[in-house]
Image (cartoon, rainbow, N blue to C red):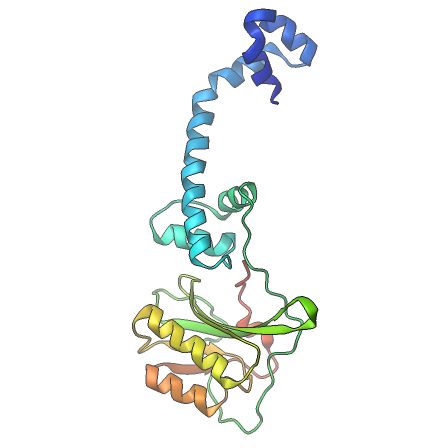
Amino acid sequence: MNRCQFVEDHQRRYGVKRLCRILGIARSSFYHWRRSAPLRAARQAADAQLAARIRVIHRASDGTYGAPRITAELREDGERVNHERVARIMQAIGLAGLRLRRKHRTTIPDPAAAKVPDLIGRNFTADEVNRKYVGDITCLPLAGGTFRYLATVIDLCSRRLAGWAIADHMRADLVVDALKAAERTRGSLAGAVMHTDHGAQYCSRAFANACRQAGVTQSMSAIGSSADTDFGSSG
């Protein structure tokens, strides 16, 4: 229990001076603590309201969003909040995002694939939503030594996960399904740029056709530069 709270609860019986001496706290510290009680109560109430909103966003993401993406969602909804506060509240209520660990090589270049220009140029920002996306595949280890593969489509303006697909394979269907999921989420991707690495899935004819049908322009990073699609999407 907080020592100041203990003094507050027992002062009528034992007196503030005696309790502070026994507990080793200055009386001035106790009185300051008591004066600031309304401010603490207001802050706790605000944190409780924010925690409720964080729970909703975290649940809607199927438990995948960490503090950075939840902060972005809150800001899009008009909440003035920083990442540190969101992280603190998430830790207090026992929430965490999905931590993706790359244990398998998921980028396998296709030397026969047609050349696609780099339209991003390592500028992983956008002034408007639904204009620039980045796609990636992450390996998810499961119990028993098995794996699943997660394909994501993330908006470079909001950092929101617009579309995703998960499967026990890394065929082109995986990234096509993720792109179609993003199209369903946003209604239309027409005019947007889709930036990926040179993995065989993204170089496939199936993915190129899916991009054309969605009105998306493909963009690819330099071969062998995996960092070009890793822009800090964890959590």
